[in-house]
Length: 116
Image (cartoon, rainbow, N blue to C red; front, side, top):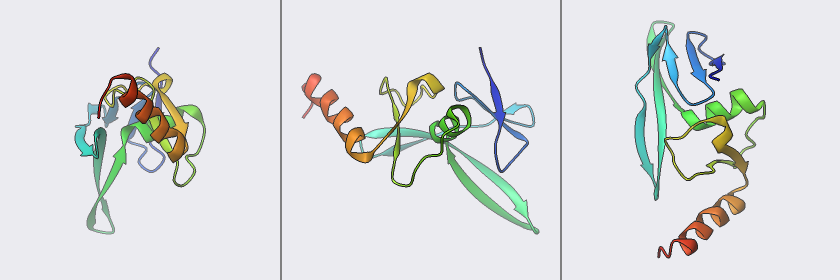
């Protein structure tokens, strides 16, 4: 079942537990960004504050995790996609890991798949 929560800073933005993002009832464009060997999906909010437009970038997986797990993400910690698919931002596919544990998960995948 799809559940929705409001963005903490922008109440007109709704985020689902499976990573869909809507603003004022319309889908928000998600952008893809390569970071090292992985991809991340994010969206940009342009908002007018005191007459000046500002842009804010939010990683979808981090917002889904924060909103639907109820946990804060400690500084330096990572949100890991359990199935290694950055497009799958469903809450059941996300977990909080220390940088060391996150690196171990990805290095074990490389070893298992014989990737150098």
